[in-house]
Amino acid sequence: MTFHQRSNVTTASMPQSLYLSSTISPNATLLKPQLPAPPPKLLRLPPAPPSSSAISLPPNPKSLNPQLQENLFYLDSLGIDSFHCLTSHPLLVSASLPQFKSVVDFLHNLHLNIQEIRRVLHMCPEILTASLQLTLRPAVTFLLREARVEGRHLPAVIRRRPRLLTRSVEEQLRPALYFLQSAVGIEDVSKCATLLSCSVETKFIPRLDYFQKLGFSKREATVMFRRFPSLFCYSIEENFEPKSKYFLVDMGRELKELLDFPQYFSFSLENRIKPRHLICVEKGVCLSLPLMLKLSEVRFWDRLEVCCSSSIPVRTSPFWCTKIDDSVT
Image (cartoon, rainbow, N blue to C red; front, side, top):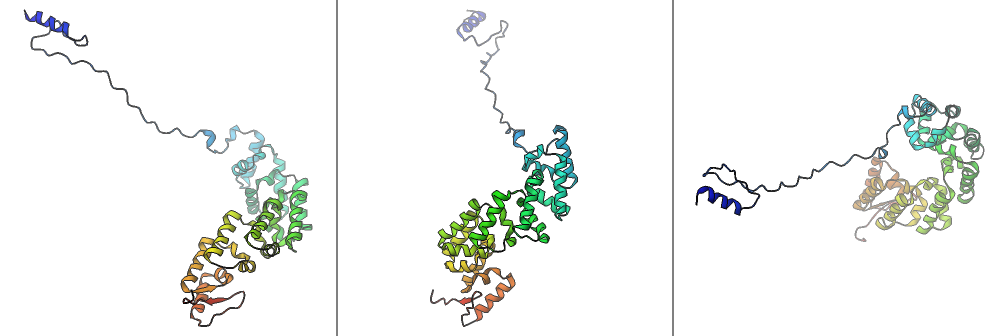
């Protein structure tokens, strides 16, 4: 059998995927079969950026209607953050420029300067859309005549609680005034006029109820809020609960001390109450709450040194200190 005959026999017996040239030389080698190409690697693309609806962007002036654009330019000219006002109170879209100007003039007439007006409108942009005749003027009249706020103190009250100007006299301000006077017994509400913007049902009553659940009688709880009306401003979950727990459990004090000094809840738990209590425990000294919390850092350490060096316990209410006998504990 010749070389070409042997070659033909070999070719016929191999798979069709192999290829031999008709002119292949005797010394040539067979080609390897072609394997299927591997699948393409999957590319890991970076996460898609958030949609434009999820990003708060300043309004494009060209996309605003002319009236709103004019209003925003007016606020900007006064140094007021128009974008903040618009996002906080979308009803500004439907307001008119004369409305804005009349409100700013009204605030000027209440003896608020431009810096104070900026702050007031930043805190409560709803003032810009409140009706002068139905809301703003009646609220000011109520504060001056019924709440007995002196005219010279009115700007300070508005600076602290601008929302007072947007509250309804019949539905909000007058009920709050009557509750503070009759239920709590606060005679001069003008000293805590900022509380008049609070709700009786959702603010005042739940806080009084919490102190009764804590162990105070209704009368005692009322006395505490009468002595320190700012208690109505504090959160039950974020203030009352952690501070009362630390007072009763960790400090091991009696409720009567809170009755005498409700201002305890106005001090920072982490920055004032805990550090000073732990120092007193370390020194073996028990200070009254006013001494422990009200004194400046220098006076606190001076008082602590006096108590530590005294061999006779000193106790003169309400500012007393007692040297704790370690042998007893």
